[in-house]
Amino acid sequence: VGEEWCFRACMLPTSVIFSHVSARAQAPVGEEWCFRACMLPLLLDADISPTRVVLTCPLLFGIAHLYNAVGFYRAGKPVGIVMLAIGVQCAFTTVFGWYAALLFYRTGHVAAPILAHSFCNHMGFPAFGAVPSHPRAAALGSAYAVGIVGFICLLRPLTAPGLYSNPLVECWGRVCEHGVPQ
Image (cartoon, helix red, strand yellow):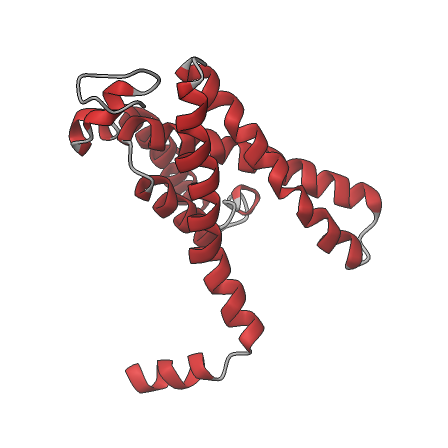
């Protein structure tokens, strides 16, 4: 099995390999470093409330993905379709940015949003529209519902700052007893 996989992987065009590596490693590391590890602490130090930082910084993350319009446009898509696709992508990346910003703010570690971003890029946008026509639509719909409810119920407990042994999380936006300005 290992040799067969290696043979198939080695035969892939370089552009396909680069695209997969970029989406699952390079983009998550670069974007999360820029938008979470660099921007959030600076905004928190500027006496902006954590809620405002977590909600507004991801708007810039969403806007940063507008460059994808060029690819759609060059592919010959009608301008209306390009605008709709980019609007949906900008909204989706902003919502994901809220999640990633909350992960970074609550854990104090950039690894959490990097891993979430990589997983999100790997999985892609959920195919909610395919559920009704799926042969096991009820089971699939139930799995989606359980997953969404579980995510909502477990988000705060699983990102509790105390779980991640990062005393600087307590210091966001002020100098604390550790003597390190945060």
